[in-house]
Each structure stands twice: as structure tokens, then as C-alpha cells.
Length: 300
Image (cartoon, rainbow, N blue to C red; front, side, top):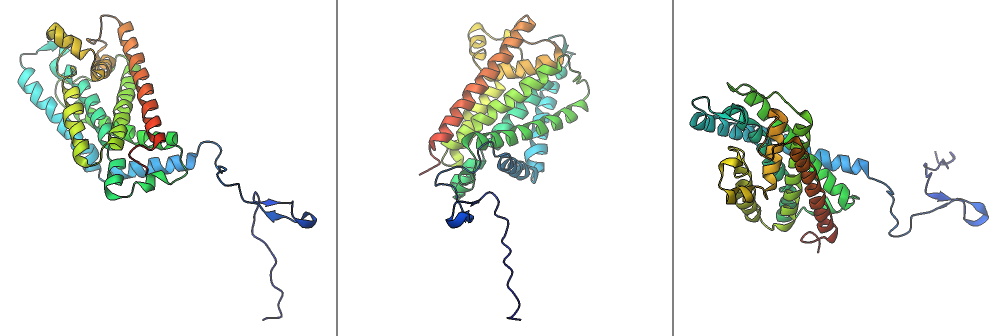
């Protein structure tokens, strides 16, 4: 078969051939060193990392979604039994209806933190952090994928909690202001996801991350008005509560259901809180972006 002519068909090289060779022949042209091949957003890479993070927690959804929902549900059971007797009214509703929205958004925020604070830290401990740093993703794309996955987990936990609480006697989760439920729920989850990502960059072992959870996240969550209105506190403790961002997220989220909150006497106070939480998220996102860009504790 040696006398058969060889095929001279060339593979498709559109985009890498340039007619600047001798006699006008096409020559192979490679991009200059350091010249980016992706000039805009790498949507495919962003989607891939996002799906990787979602599948990571969804494969163990019993631990990452349903277990946190059940644990948070136990708070509702315990506190309504202990404090909700005698048809106790708070903000014009029974105690179970008052406390349920706060527990939902608290569970969302804590799980957003848990999700985003794991990946980078696990990569550093296991020596696989390069899997996050080598793909052709900018710092903004990397951050967006990680935060998006954490918020997705938060939303799923929130839906699981809502479904469970609807089955609890006496809980009414009808929404007075759906915009507040959506805004404060997503903004609160984003805030904790950004904080978790920053924590995972700083931490060098799992003990460091656990310290942030136990000594920062848990106290701020539980002492933010989830189980009470801050008007019942002494003036000094009211002032402390009002510098706690968790208080505004939880009270604003509750306002979406009840139409009332302890943020202020008017709806304008809630709108100001919504704006403040948004600004806080933007500032924290800028900080996380700059830290990622610097490569602090990630590169070298």
C-alpha cells in the first residue's frame, strides 16, 4: 500500500494561521507570551468551578443540608416549649411565628460560612490548593463561583427549614414583604460566604476555622435578636446589638414575614438597614478580592 498517495489534508487551524510566511504561505502563529486568550469573562470556567462546589456539598446533602435544618429546627422546638407557653405574643404574633424567620436566616448564614470556609482550607491542608489557583480564572471569577456555591447551599438549607417549620403547629410563615425576605436572606448569606472565604484564606488548619466559628459566628448569630427583641435589653446591650450586622439581617428578614421589626418604628429604617447590609457586602467583597489578588497565604 506504499504506492497510495498520502493525505495532505491539514486539521482546522483557523485562528492560529497567519498568511505572513514566505510567498504568502500560511504559518502557525501562537499568542505572545503573557497574552491572554480569554479577553472577557470565562463563563465556562466559572460555571465549572461553581458546579464542582455545588456537587461537593450536594453529594453529602444529608450532612450539609438536612442535618443543619434538623439541628436548627430543634431550637424552635426547645424555645417554643420553654418560652412559648401561655400564648406569649412578640411583635403582635405568637412566639413560634416570631422566632421561626430568625432561625431560618440564621441557619442560612451559618451554612453559607461553613461552605465557603472549607474549600480553600482543605486545599491548603491537603496540598491541592493549586487546583483552584491554576485554572484560567481571574480573582473575581474565582470569588464569584465560590460565593455562588455557598449562597446556593444557604438557599437550600433555608428552603428545607421553611418546609419543616410549616409543619410545626402555630407557625405562620405568610410573607408581608417578599422583597425583604429575598434581599436580607441573600445579602446575609453573601456576607457570611465572603467572611468564610476570607477565613479560609487566613486559616492554616481546621482548628483556626473552628475558632472563628465558635468565637465569632456563633455568638454573633445567637446574640442578634433571634429569640428576643432588643427593646428588652438594657440600653448598653441595645447599643452593642445595633453594631452587630447579624441583628440587621435577622430583623430585616423577620420584617419580610411579619411586617414589623425592632430595627425602628418606620419602614424607612428597614430600607436604610437593607442599604447598609448591601454596602457592607460590597466593602467585604472588595477586601476579599484584594486579598485573593495579593496571593496572601495562598501563593508562594
